[in-house]
Length: 70
Image (cartoon, rainbow, N blue to C red):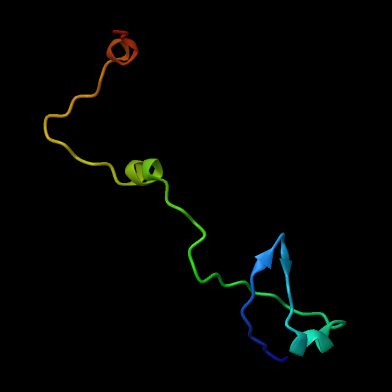
């Protein structure tokens, strides 16, 4: 087995192979994608649900208070 490393961008689900590696065109290869930046964005709501803020003397609103109209 031979390991080859190069950087490229995925465009429309396609990985472009650099010219110098195109001779491998008919071979079966194993592809591992390692992203340089995190593709998982943490939503603030998900973060707060996972790590709730503790406040002294907190009492949640009742159903009536939530649906109250001014």
